[in-house]
Length: 118
Image: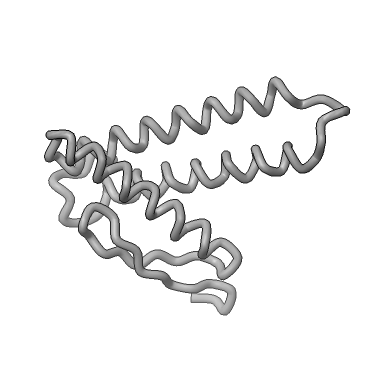
């Protein structure tokens, strides 16, 4: 592990995970992990007890949010646009993409019911 990388422990769907990130992205990764965990919790508390299905549904929801933000971004790209708004949208897209990656990584973890990733 390089000097610019840190390991953090997060819990998603009652499973503790050690993830590597940069110090600059640690807060974003923790926030993304918490968001994924909350979404999986909402889905499983609604009667769906399959963690795998909940993770897939979470990934789909977050991917939809990424698409929506990308569409908003493409509609608002204008020479007159405030750079702060553009940075905020880009940051939101990055955070959601990171959440999707966490959900997808969860699906391929050892011990998950079955791997859906080839």
